[in-house]
Length: 190
Image (cartoon, rainbow, N blue to C red; front, side):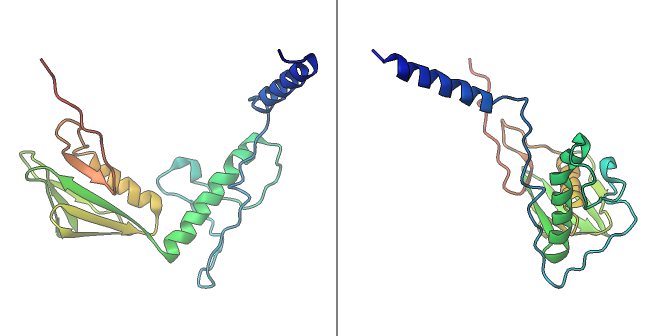
């Protein structure tokens, strides 16, 4: 049997633990407050143009200062703004890339006159315009390398290509991005 004094301490610590896990408490992410490291070759300047051409949330240029930390919208955008600026710095220094793997009988890709031609088992070949600012190479007919300085553009173009033949779990055929894998499902059993 546990003495009364020990039971009281145990119930108090359980209550304080539950209070610490309450959802009404403000929690700040530390992503927004961490510094962005960049080399001396990178020059950062503010340009009064859209920050992103594909995402409507970021059509206005980002501000790197916090005017009022009590406003919920500003607290929400601290980490996002920092991550977007960090992606810009990384894109300028190193660049981003995505690899597409074509798995399936007759699935092929080729560059034809500045366009990406895909043969994916349809009755006709698919021709896709390569967006400006991206470099697309086809080292092997079943691999496509996409590289560029804008992470969002690289991943968006890779997703558009993948949409033509998403990986399916029964035969495990389709277009895979980077090291993507899917779990194989068993077919119908009698």
